[in-house]
Amino acid sequence: MLMAVINWAWCPVIITALAVVAFIYGWPIEAVVPSLVVIFGIGLVLAIIRAKKNELELLSTKLRQLAGYFNRRFMGNSSLSIFAIIDSLYSIDNPQVWDWARACGISQRIFDTWGNSFISRLESDFRTRKLSYYLQTYLNELWSINSHYHEFIEQFYEVAEKFKTPQEIIDQYNRFVLEYNAFAQSFRDAITELKTAARTEIEPPSVKFAREMPRAKRDTGQGDEKTP
Image 1 (cartoon, rainbow, N blue to C red):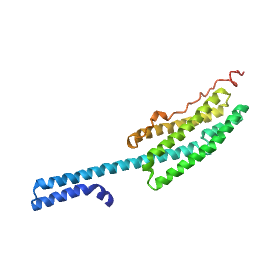
Image 2: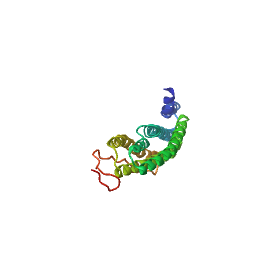
Image 3: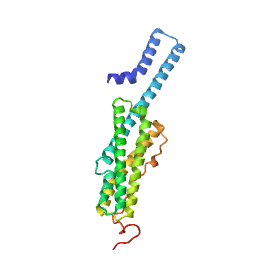
Image 4: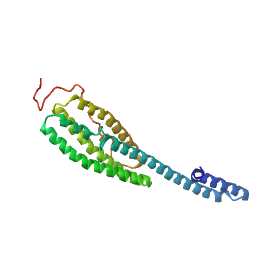
């Protein structure tokens, strides 16, 4: 409480004290006013700097929460990870799908390593109160991670449309889409706020939504081959 008073009230206190002293000793007003104006200007500049710093710290906290949520819900061993949904495609009797799923499994290990490293660095800078200084860098990296992640979502959608996919896998994917799109909207909102504070060149629409698959999926076999 005392620190808050010192940080915010020192300027009006000094101005008031100087004005009182000038009145008591009868100092000429033309000598006092410039000093009061200078003190007021310094206080105003410091208040703007402090407000900017507080805004960056708040946005840093939001970015940390978004990154943590993304890493916890959509990566690693989470059942909502797109990689977990891709793994379920092994139930489809098709070697082409298996080869693609295996390739995604290799990519997942690389992806998880990248994501864990990102979260570790972000949390370290947050604890040492350095995150606001690297806010734009971390925002760019989270955007890059999410953009690459979205590529796997698109690939799954194309594979699931091309090959006959069990309804339970489609339902699992659609549950993922609902939560992922909520995250994407939050990420867009955060970018909008960050554009003024961090001057990022990332545009909110560049965070793409996932496409939901129709529940009653058309009955197709591999390629254009029809099934009864």
